[in-house]
Length: 324
Image 1: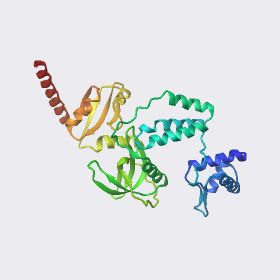
Image 2 (image 1 turned 180 degrees about the vertical axis):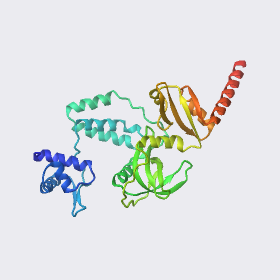
Image 3 (image 1 turned 180 degrees about the horizontal axis):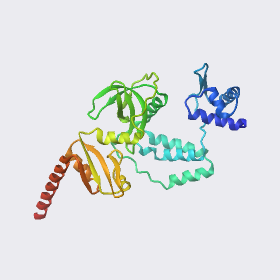
């Protein structure tokens, strides 16, 4: 059985990691009786942690929001991970996060042990962030937390969604997960009006609470949600799609093709398939050529014709330039 102080830390860690616990579940995790759990909860409340309790068979314990933020329980690796995340957050497409991250990092460094402060200090001193350029799409941090909370609590979500053309529609969805790329955040959710899974860009979402009611989570549309979103945003959303064979190993191709550019699939140790899309075949030609990798067209055959047209256009331009 854990000593009281160690048990309190373990209890706090459990409450921070999970939305709600029943008394018997906590007792089993801690190796104590439910009565001891109740006493430990009272001790946490005395220390300023707002632990809510609901009676009955469906009740349990939940770490609530208080007037002041109580200290978090982090081990060494978690503390360094948080510092790394704060250091790089400014370039991740979250609106207004830069200044907030700096303030949070300063507070974290004040309470870090010397051994960890040196590690974080070296990171700060020898890292130069390459931030996103002006005009890049950003998402409000409060919107991200609202979406994440709805995913966690399995609550129906209502929002206004702005499409690529600027038109807005009202959506009611069962949110499943947030997926982030280097440039954007996406919400994967079951669209109740369309009875199908949909992927929404988070920077185009304006929540319209109240949300709810709770729902029973569905099986996700794919085991690999990152690949699912990558396919949707790089191929499924476009009128023209293509499959080309890149004459480079998969790992080399990944250096030139981001998840939002297309979906890669290994063929052998020397080549891989790229599935991608664009608004037109002509844009596809440019999109594929900009990868800078030799390739062969698999489909559609019309893409080969547009490549020949582009080749002839460039050749004529070069000839005129040489004559001039």
